[in-house]
Image (cartoon, rainbow, N blue to C red):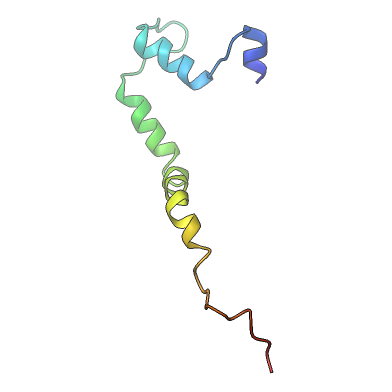
Length: 79
């Protein structure tokens, strides 16, 4: 990504903010400091729809192949 190219290393912006604020007890002068649970709640609120859908895809995706499938239905021609 662009960040990684300019920093010369792999950079994940969301992790960098988490690392600065939570792991390194960052300075509130730059971004402000949030408690550790802010990231859990923020992720939950931002991913309320996308996360459950993404988590369900490995389970329900393969089942979609079998929905409405009647064995031998394609072998017969209408008429």
